[in-house]
Image 1 (spheres, rainbow, N blue to C red):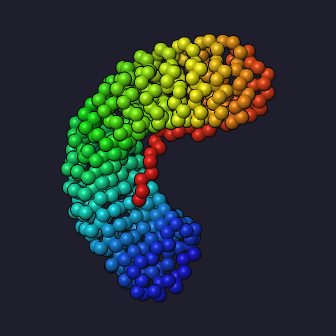
Image 2 (spheres, rainbow, N blue to C red):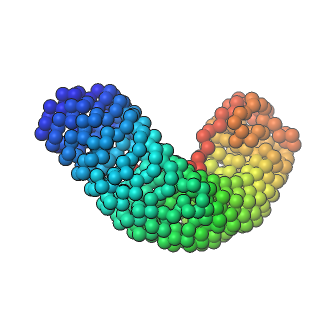
Image 3 (cartoon, rainbow, N blue to C red):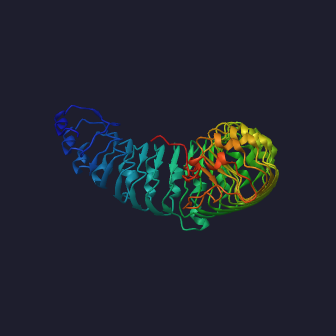
Length: 458
């Protein structure tokens, strides 16, 4: 617990107790330290509410109390400390609305983090009056309504996090704030995924700051074509657009975004061929194109992805053979080719996947024997091959895969799995494989989630 006696240190300027295992409540006695400028108890296990008396701390510039298990409403008096430059209550259980005049009462605000709470209501227009604001994260709350276009009046804005709320009204006018953000020349991260935004992306999105590195649009109702002009955002590292209603071809111009490390276009209505220009994305380590209507062959230059860890192209209409080079990428951790129309052999190069833990080739048209080299995938945990036309014996080398937890006949995405033998009607199964009891009960390792993103440092 935090000793209330610390409140007697009336000349204290800074109090930093963050990243400990402190429990209990925040003592109201701290409000007696009128000289206090810096107060941080972030990353503990504190509970209770913020003492109302904290509004007396008129010199406070840094107030950081998240994450903890604090709850209740933020005392209005805290929003009236005009010297405040950093306000962070992220990762608690606070609720209530934001004062409509917050930008006037906190004019010196530079960083504002209230994400991962239970705030609701509309986002105030008055934030534009706090012209020094650089970081705003209101994600994972219950905000609704329109996003203020006045955010475009913040010349120093670097991060705007709006994700996982109920913002927007499913129509195109809910994106009216985007043109204003083209004035924010310092913008590096923009996230408005998991909301109710709809309609086509405005052309102005391509005029956002060239400093932009992270753009999160996923899990909305966005429609129309993916703008080819996104190529202007030359420093993008993350582009997340999954689970929308985008249609049309994947723009060839996306291949010019050579700083991309994460590209997620899954769960849309995209069709046509995968452009070979995507092979230029040599820094990419996560690429998800699954659950679309893409057709044609997989570009052989996907073998250029020397840093690739996760590749998801399942649930499309892709055909042709699986490029050997793609199965030679030793950095790969999860590869999902399932539910397409791939033909030919499963290449022996699969044995070069030295770090693989998930391989899914199920429900294709693969033929001939399963290569013995699959036994070289010593880190493999999940192998799905069902729904093909393999012949001959199951490779005895499978018995050497001591980490293998799931060798299936049943599709691994199902919520429940039956305790079953490994059965392939057209295959002869060596007794050494059947006897390997670790494969008999199907525990599925956690599959990489589409909505993972690099941590933002608050």
